[in-house]
Every structure is written in C-alpha cells, then in structure tokens.
Amino acid sequence: MSKDEGVRRNNGNRSNNHLKTKNSTAILPLIGGIAVIGFSVLLLVLRAIIPSLIIMLTGISLIIYWMYITRAKNQKNGSKYDKKCICAICKHTESSVCIKQKCVCCSIAKGDKIVGHTNNPLQ
Image 1 (spheres, rainbow, N blue to C red):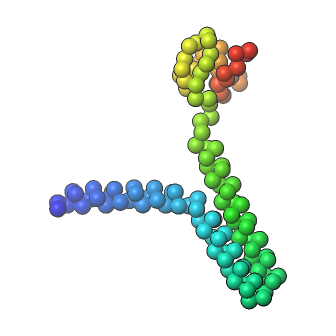
Image 2 (cartoon, rainbow, N blue to C red; image 1 turned 180 degrees about the horizontal axis):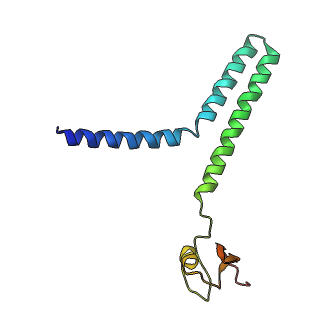
Image 3 (cartoon, helix red, strand yellow; image 1 turned 180 degrees about the vertical axis):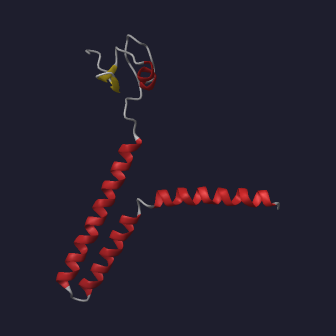
C-alpha cells in the first residue's frame, strides 16, 4: 500500500464520519428522551413518585422536540417552488426553468425580484 492510497482511505473515512455525525444529531433527543423516561420508571419502581413524574415530563418533552426536529427537517428538504410547471403559455416542464428565465406568466414577483412560482391558471 502506497502513501497516496492511505491518504485517500483516510479522506474517505472522514467524509463518511461527517455524514454519520450529521445524520445522528437528529436522533440524540429521541435517545435522551427514552433514557430519561427509563430512569423515571426506575424511580417510580423505587416509590419516588413526584421526582419521577417531573423527570418523565422532561423525557416526554425531549421526544416531542425530536418529532418537531424531524418534521422541520423533512419540510426543509422540499423545494421552495413547485416541481412542475403546468402553465399553458410558457410550456416549461419545471418551475426552476421559469424562475431562471423570469417568465411573466407564472412567476411571482415582489418588486423587481422573483420570489416564487405559481401554477394558478387564473393569474
């Protein structure tokens, strides 16, 4: 194995580790919430009712926060504009083409700046 192959392998591992870290950050509140709820159940078994209920609420709030993060992340992955253009005037198939060419028929403008795309035929 040459020195260059070792460098290539290390660079590949770094990018894979970065991707794993990026994907695992959204799951940490879920794991923490489950662990906190497990701890509160243990306290319930040991008959410490009031502290365990407070800790259980913390765990439930962590799980709700995880649900919020994943939902926001899924919405962010979607495009800001519609994927298809069904305008009968410009005949484009994708809205990104309409926005790049600044079509008057189906682009939404605010002043001189194009801020979106519409498929409304009544516009």
